[in-house]
Amino acid sequence: MRGRGRSNASPLPDTTGSRPKLVVSVDGRGVVSHAGSRLLVDLADATGLSASLTDALRRLRPRGTGHDPGRIAVDLAVMLAGGGEAIADLALLRDQADVFGPVASTPTAWRLLAGIDPTTLAALQTARATAREVAWLQAAEAGREIPAAHVGGRDLPGLVLDIDATLVTCDSEKEQAAATYKHGFGYHPLLCFLDNTGEALAGLLRPGNAGANTASDHITVLDAALAQIPDAHRHGTDILIRTDSAGGSKAFLHRIRALRDRGVHASFSVGHPVTEPVRQAIRALPDHVWHPALEQDGTLREGAEVAELTGMVDLAGYPDGTRILVRRERPHPGAQLSLFDLDEGMRHQVFLTDTAYGEGSLQLLEVRHRAHARVEDRIRCGKATGFGRFPSRHFHINAAWLELALTAVDLLAWTQTLLLEGELATAEPKKLRYRLLHAAARITRGSRRLHLRISATWPWRHELTSAFTRLTALPRPAT
Image (cartoon, rainbow, N blue to C red; front, side, top):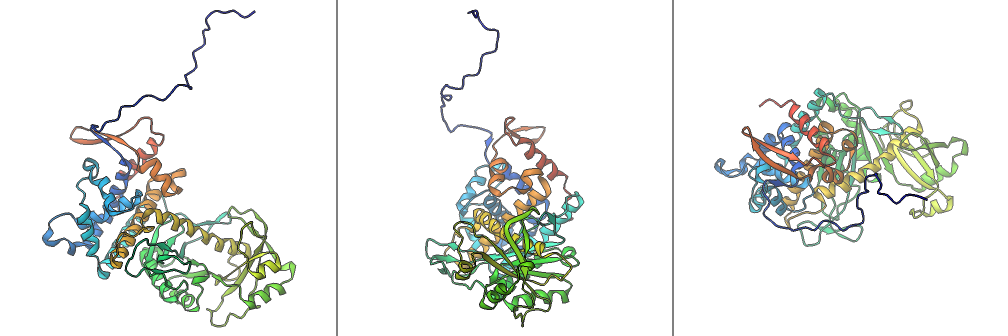
């Protein structure tokens, strides 16, 4: 029989008891939330964004009094980067002056936005481009070059720009809001993101009934996006412009081709509708010209094949060297199929590119184009970083809000490129907020310095403190 004596083993922790009882009060001292957001404020200073915005908005500071307009713009961008949704959410920063300093009141922020006319908006865009150039130079000096876009298991040379539109619902009457093609009501902004880093290069606020395939709007956004790219990268670097079929107009593609005359080595990969001539060409393709398609990791994509239709479809009027490719695959459950797809039993997607023969296999060109779908994730995250809701009934205020939302996206992207490593360097904003930006801390003072003390048990304390250390080491722009 086993003995009944007392065991020498350590007792197991009690995991069945109730949670500790709490007494909640509002008398805490020296405690701050969202302490990690200070990282974004300091990064705005380190890249020269704060100073550039101050110069751009100088005329909105009468007699040099009151809050610095550039500082207000930075605070608004930081608030949006942290997940704020309304101007009133500036209160979170304002009420923690020990960390964020003096922050403008809500009425003051409103007056700033109301004063941003088209000329000032263009100055804001120039300020963002100036800061981007500094951020990219800082990345180069720190040995953290702008990463390559990754498709089909390999890195693409150069830069990849993704242009796409989205619908933003307005729940109240707003200037130039209109009925959308999806039977909603709101705005229809057109946006451009840099696939390499997730930076938001350009955005054009448009009425909800704006055309999806308007060539002039695509040209406007492309020109604004190219103006955001530093000269050293805009000239002499391969730049691929990707869109869905809405960007496949001949006028837009000719504009891309004309960029080469200005020293910009641009090419395109754009969607194309499955028209009747395209259907006939697909039906005429023999089986042996179809090649297995690839997944984004470079492995074979089961049930998918790619082929070329160049020479079988009339491409008169398109830039010389335009090619047309098609992918077919077994449809996944719930896929929306055309009558042609139903007849063939396969889903077909077609796109145009001017990438020359010998510069990539059919499989690579197709998986490269399919990676354009990543822009949908950029837009989804962007909507959670400011442009999913517009605060005013005035169109010009909402256009300024969109520009500040793009600035917020940039701050997050620069933080990842310059300051973070591993999983957090590619994480979505939601994860960055949860792990870093919304971290709480305690404030203490000593040796004439302010100390921000992250909890010793916070799981991502080392990542956050390392980011602040890298920030301190960044070279500062000359003033």
